Image 1 (spheres, helix red, strand yellow):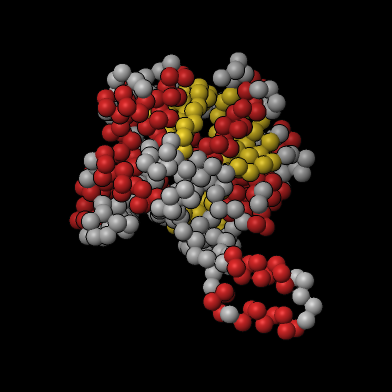
Image 2 (cartoon, one colour):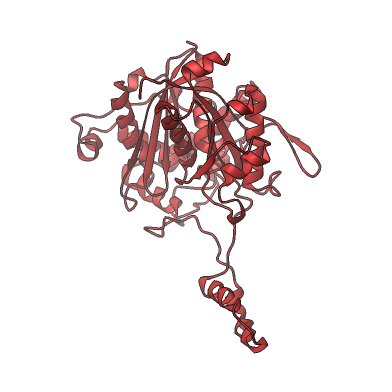
Length: 426
């Protein structure tokens, strides 16, 4: 990082909800607009101090393709503030945040809001390519009989969206099955991790820990108050999870709906500032950014192992070891994905063959990992999760009175991300 220190002033998110529940009539634009307003209200930032907005998203809506700019305007912010949207699969918000960090560290900006948004209730569904070509050609039709080409009803069938890796045509669940099988993560280990995630999220909700990062909102048209996440299951148990059938590889797979993240709607943003600017405006920052790293592996064999590569890289950049880290926030796309990455980090063989290191990175104690729940229980709006992780990590540092937190995520395309932040108040 440059001499200009970049600090996290604060962050917030609207509650993360299962797709097709209370946010089903809202677009990703609406969710982002509400989260932006929530962050402005929480921090009492003067809109005239804000210099940039950056938002991550994965499933872009054609009408709001630059959702950062549209949400900015919808939130009532000055039209003079530039905004852009980024997409990097499940680390889109991470990329938005690090783009903001770079703008501040390089001296181009002093105050940036960054994060992301996603609506899995409002996935654009399009016609098949053959029919799309007919529609484009129809703009030049001059004779009624030319429209007879539309009588083939098969052409009217839509393309059903499928969350699959473009390079391999496999779903993430199928890839995760390959990974856990190769690395040796059992069904029971995955179910135990999932139960832990749900119980911790329920506990953190009941104790008010998650309320620190949530902005309650009223949802039109009945203006129903939504003040907490609705995906965690307090009554999750091994008995219930063991009854679930494999979702991706039948009948002998190990990944089920119970140990995988669910489709989620939500938005989350953080307020980043240059440290002296933040203090001049009267803020007490929560954390300072130490370092961040991105990695890329083969999508054919290591689609979900991003954290196993990004974590050692970011530790080296910060001149720290796993033992120096007090708080870990690791994205839970699947229970098996997290456990596989942890096993890789604790493997001498993986270190030598994949990282070019003489010995393993080390073991991450589970009592430091996602202690307020994770994506399996809180939810995973693709474009917003990274912002939730950063905010939660900062809040945990302060709550636990610890020094360093590490955030790590995997993403489609076999991408990985990790970031280290340091408590400003410890």
